[in-house]
Amino acid sequence: MRKKALKNQIKVYRAKNDWTQEELAHRVSVTRKTINTIENGKFVPSTYLALKIAKVFGASVEDIFQIDDA
Image (tube, rainbow, N blue to C red):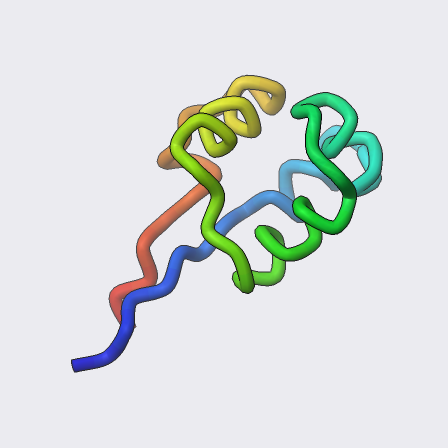
């Protein structure tokens, strides 16, 4: 059985808003490194952080994060 991964659209939404990782990190009160590791799929954010990220983008959590069933 393969391990499921969490895909995300953070980079896409950052580009739409013309935000750097640092700007997004500041808006959700985390470090740039945290945003980088989430964006690259190395770290799964807490529910609270996922909700904060979705809120600053004006999107739903499901718009930003998806389970990769592949």
